[in-house]
Amino acid sequence: MKLRNSKLALFFTKGISLRNWEEIGVLDRELKPYKKFAKYFDEIYLFTYGDKEDLKYKKILPDNIKIFPKKLNLPPLLYSFLLPFLYRLELRNVDIIKTNQMPGSWAAVVAKFLYRKKLVVRCGYEWLRNMELKREHKLKRLLAFILEFLAYKTADKIIITSHENRNFIIERFKISPKKIEVVPNYIDTNLFKPIKVKKERRLIFIGRLEREKNLANLIKAVSKLDIKLVIFGNGSLKEELEKLAKKLKSNVEFKGNIPNEKLPLELNKSEIFILPSLYENCPKTLLEAMSCGLPCIGTNVPGIREIIKHKENGYLCGTDDKSIRKAIKEVLENKQLREKISKNARKTILENFSLERILENEIKVFEAL
Image (tube, rainbow, N blue to C red; front, side):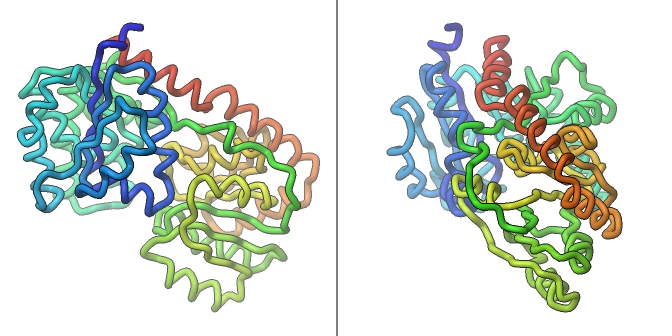
């Protein structure tokens, strides 16, 4: 194989460690592709923002994946600029550098210039676009534009998770379409699959409890329905949403974070998965629910409408509470529709988002370099 004698370096998102991944329940999910990549590369280096405690995760990794934690106890931003210099010997030895998300990508850009390596800039979400949708301060958006412009222009290849984000990068940053590859988020279809388990009359939501997830309207929608809403995840709005649910007497249970490997059971126990977001990129939780064969409801917004085809493999609705309520009622009351979208949802994931298919596409990107 072309990559057999090559070394890959992954730069973690600024401030993120292996321990962080474990704490939020995604360690296995995030490491899975690199365990697969280990069969293709001679060595893989993980540059994290954790302390020496990150080294304990070596025991769950193949021998040719090496962990490089923070060398100095500095704030993540300052450390990100020093990282390429502190690990200069290791970085001189690699062939391809890859970023995990845009925040902190400048460390990889500096390393490319210093050591003349190939650079793959990977974005699970488009940073500037998200800031604009959140209406962040103009100065923050300007800084994000400058940093992304440098990363995109410097990169040998760009990996983005959706076509809408790809079009944004082309139009806003004037990047050649040939440079950008759309590689969606992957799903382990052997883990996330239909399971024969007793269904509970409940809706399930999985994600961060933040404004863009539009959970207030979801809670309002279920307040007038005879169904329980189970919410997995944490965020800054948890207390506010709990008060709203109590005030409206909505049947809502807040369950907090859960390890990724325990999600398939919770999904299969539910009647419907719902994602009422104001915008998304390539939502993993939606893909995981579809892989379990759940009837899924999502809002007709960027990132969701690219995955869900209305009344074919899912159900699209508006972002207001009345539209969400109407969608829940129709899917709940129409058994034939549920069975149709459930079957097509699983098929969609197997054909387009399986771990094997996505990693195959990413390997092709590496081999082209």
